[in-house]
Length: 189
Image (tube, rainbow, N blue to C red):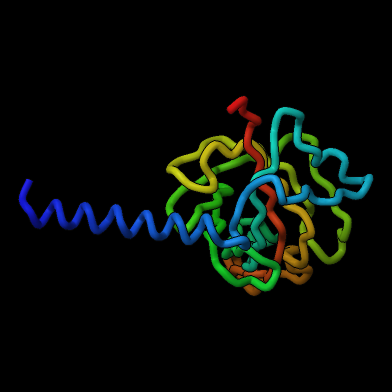
C-alpha cells in the first residue's frame, strides 16, 4: 500500500468520525429513550407495536404520493419524500421511496411491508391512512439498522385524486406529510 492510499484512508476515517460525532451530538437527530411513542386514537389500536420492541427514532416526511391513471381509477405507485429530524423540516436525515423503503443520508436502509389487518384513517377524507409496517430487510450501518417496525402516523394529504386522469398512464403527485416512528428489538446489552 503506498503512502497516498494510507493518507486517503486516514482522511476518510477522520471525516467519518467527525460526521458521526456531529450527528451524535445533535439533539435533533439523537435516537433513544427521550422519544415518546405517538398518541394513537382508539380506532388505531391495531398500530400498537408488539412487546419486545423499543422506539428509537422519529422522522418527519415531506413529499408526494405518486399515482397513475389506469383508465378507470388511480393506482398508487410510490411515495417520494425527504425525511427530516424536526417538525420544521430542517436537517434532512434521509428519504423515503418505493418498496416502501427508508434510506438514511449515510446509506443505511430498511424495506418494510404493511402488517396485515392493521391501519386506520383518522381523517379519511383528507389524508392517507396511518399504518403499521414490519421490516422485511435492513442494510448498512446507521439509523435504519436492525429496524423491526415502523409506524406512519399524523398524515396530512396524499390521497388519490378524485377526478379522472387526462389519459391512461397520466401521473399525479399529491403532496403529503407524515411522521414515521422506527422501532428495534429490545436487547439485553
